[in-house]
Length: 165
Image (cartoon, rainbow, N blue to C red; front, side, top):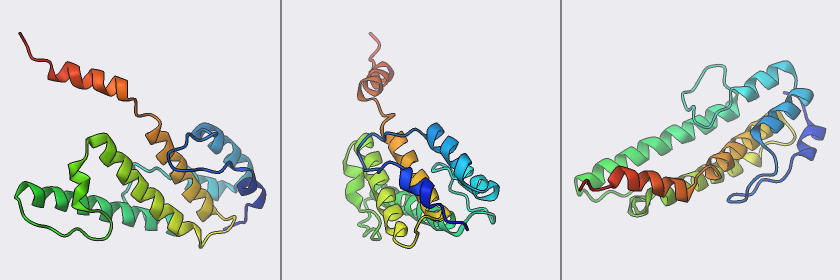
């Protein structure tokens, strides 16, 4: 893996719950200028919505996907046990209070957990492809967060729940 000092140094700081000043398209356009062809291929296949582990994935992407799979398994277990009124102590990743909030708030909490995992992985990466992949994952989280539109969601919800007269 190469070192990408100049590319990483020019990337804007990303903060959870703050709209990013860079778009995914702009980020990828800049990355293509700085990264080797092989590293750029690795970066482009980084997708927060894809959690199936591929043998060609970088180690950092495999680690993220393992975390994501564990998170999803635990969510499923918490939901199954809550439906059966079984007292379940979740692993350290999530807690059952996640089910007690509205779906939007639950989604935000899950994104915050993912963000925390990504930040925990950054300490081992300095100006390398791993750090760029982690940055791209964080950018995708923020992209998801800022596509939520409460008013539009409420309109759709109301239209689906209208009582026929």
